[in-house]
Length: 191
Length: 312
Image (cartoon, rainbow over all chains, first blue to last red; front, side, top):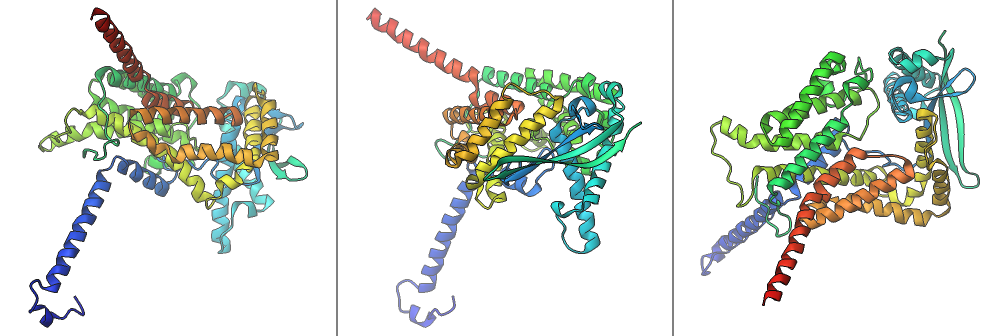
């Protein structure tokens, strides 16, 4: 209402502030109608679920479905080997997939990264972890997997003397195409 | 529960048999998605809790005896659900066991994305079916639904809402995580293809039927980045436009076909089969019983007209 000349309005048929007020009220009513229409629209519940899921991220049964949402020119997978470098069938050994093996290892690396960040006072991301830390995450993974295997018939029959967790990095290089580089993260004697 | 306002964005009324087949098939998917007690994997801890596991120790589900009881309870609840009996009891039982069990499964440090859609649909149907029941419990008058609609229509409708949301989220997160560069960077999916190909091999040390072809396709993607962007961009567009399945039944069918095609493409190229999602899409979007009935009525109506005109 600041700046309105009330004196001048006394002569007019309709006062200026009333007109302004009516206009404002009309605009507010229109806005409310639009908001109400939006809230009643068929898309509203879906939008609420979309926003909610993006906020809560991975909290089952909600998820932000982040798989393949980042397109890096390199990636990695993890395999298990025996002492002679022969690959082991992950599902037969521990009843989980190679994909799950990777997720479990990465979760352990993330946990270590948080720990190191707290110790050092600055944020440390997963790739910056030392080889020792990567090996420690591998040891932790084996600590989780081996008792699982003790309850699986295939593993009990075919248990190797040595088990290794191996990371294989796949990189896209323009001149050489796709190249794979394996690294042994941890090796443990079982017998 | 408000009536939708736009001409096209409305809750469709479901016939008795259409809703019955939806329930029957969906119950089958819920049952299929939980492991049989005989093939349970060992989960005696929840080292990386997610969802409810952050607050409750769900490892009791992994006890073979408890799980066996839960499994048969779930089977009973699903039979009741299929028959449309005691839904306010059957749905929370089925949803509780499904969500609890898969939460424990996902709390092992490896998050799977195969089951969310099934759990969320159970949850949505549970919430909808409890609305009139809870109102009655608190002595409130029943909600007046728009003419011709029943609560079952809203249960099916909110199942569609969940499906639409799941695909839109999958599209939006790709844009968020890449600052909108997902399509530009999409030829890099070749490395992911090689990864999933290798992972599938190392599961059983067995190459599947298209193991060699995937390597060829990956190389093709690198050699032809724009063709790759076109294909993967189409996939992203399907995800982002999944909300169109809420327009009406015809759009649900069209989007259902597109989403199934998308999953088929992902399966062929990456070896990732989202079988439960595909089943759910087939049940709620493709909705064969409804379209078969619709087609049947059209054909018989035409035949009827033909007989009438020949009489004349």
